[in-house]
Image 1 (cartoon, rainbow, N blue to C red):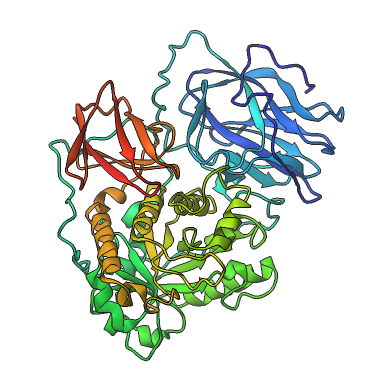
Image 2 (tube, rainbow, N blue to C red):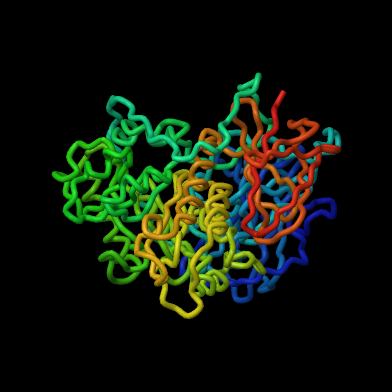
Length: 619
């Protein structure tokens, strides 16, 4: 096909005056880049456009892919050496329908393209075009096969469609996003790029052992009676007519791991709250403040049962032998590595050497076939920069559960790293609760599809072994903000890093530091535990308004809104979706209600770490 100018009536989701901030030079071979989208109104796609960077040579070819991965139309772009936006029309326009997912892509034959990292971190709508979270897609090669072979990213590769809505259709409401079908194919996921995509094929994880029948074990009781229990409304089956966020499946995910299932991890009221490498002798004290899991346990000569008899689950590091672990049902998984992608934990060499070591660790633990999941913790790989620019998706493909630790509140070095990361939101303060939710979003982008595996976020509880100038000790309010921002963004567990070198109290801050710290963490854990049945449900997609970070969930006939600001303070106005009608909203655990007027209510956030939980009965 030959290129022609796009009709004036055709529109896309990008303004052609938009200029990308970053140019990425890929490998010498071709790469195909694109965007996943749907439409709110039936119409036709008449062509494709993309932003051509300086020096991008060769024949670029655009393609529109259908909901089943079929090639609907292709077109060649002019080889005129121009830079900037380039458009090309199909010989025959293609009809597209609401409720179906399409991909527009083009091939960069010499591997040179433009990108803005972290552009598609949430659902957005531009006119009649709907872009899901993680709308950017890419794959190596010349585009053979179905579009399910694309890998999903939050990056914007500056590919757009030329769309003409059908006039005879009734306009759709702009206040609420239409439902997204759950049957649409979902591309696989890789990290936001700072270099060319990984040419190595994705690694397929070894399946977990088949589920075995085992009696459930009741989770330890909450240490605090103050948290408000989740009520049941007269219509417990109420739902919202909104699309849903990507999700790993909640506690039912652990049903395929017999030891986790036997330990109560499939219970919707169970939410993992862990300490990293806890001391066995501290199990009773940690259980008393709501800790229910050890991610790694000090191997100090104690027995494993000295931890698990307190109702605490353990994700054991290989320092514990299979004989020491035995058949203990409370040992639910294997912690195979800590920051392997950074070259730690014996993972020496270059990027792919580290991945090879991680694969060996996974194979060794998987070969035990003992009904336990595999877990690994990650550090600077979350940044998408020097440490693991192309292999984070492969690392996560080897394991069943991940976690991430970057101590944004207390480490000036971490704050500098975040500011220098291309995917960090411009202008956002890294010394904020929002930095912890950002880490969760980043980790979700490394699974295939996005958010398909659970990830936990680390929160420090003191001064986490820091020696650089300006390092601080976290406050109780900051701990609470980091925990809740992580949960708002989809964290499926919290891991406390309690080790401490502030010189004011002991190494084990949750046991040896102040009563005030212990009580604060106990109360945080109690509220998380009381809301676990809600947290453990899939979030709906809805934008309540500017300056907010929120999660919208439904449980037991109630809508719940978990809310914080975007690392700032002040009043925020919430616009409720059409499916929620109320005269007022209850603020959970704050003994107050807020009036709703015209489908909106306003509340105040005194600090960047302030969080509120709102509850509204559904009809």
